[in-house]
Length: 215
Image (cartoon, rainbow, N blue to C red; front, top):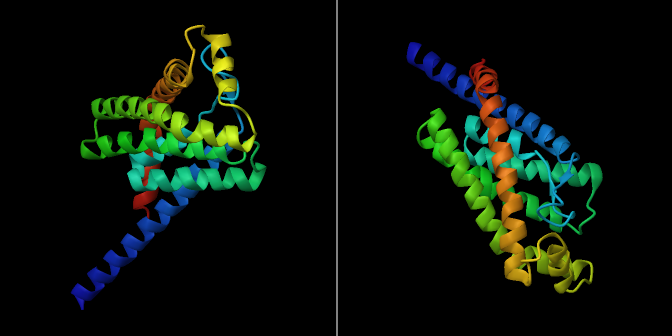
């Protein structure tokens, strides 16, 4: 009887912890979706249709606290909530870009931190994630996102290059555009988000862990 009671309590505790994780993920998704509404262009780096937001902060905090799979879930729900609340002004391309770049950033960082949970590995993970996001941005913008954006709005690809040239005279083609404009934009975003997460994560992680283990 005692063994059955312990097993029952273990199942109850596991179910409660899972439910708490779902609640935390939902809250972080809602916060991330809200942060998507506050966008900042970086006109000294890239054309102003590239806008910086800090929605990856809750996603990365969720990735560190709950794991990389939960980070993907939070990232996806964030985009869904944004669609429901505001819709899209980019034919879905901007939202797809946000999801893909976000995953490229938070998943490597969360995986690295899961391997060994220290401040050093958190910083290294965020550094790896930042580089991965910039690299993914170069490839995906060149071969998927910019062509999709151009098709959706019936724009020639040369229009993006011209906008980039106004900012940086060294931009003279699509390759130089993604390397000299898109990559730096994502590197700046990754560094800013990483600094803020590094400052915020420790106090927030205690609250999240306490909530997960609550019965």
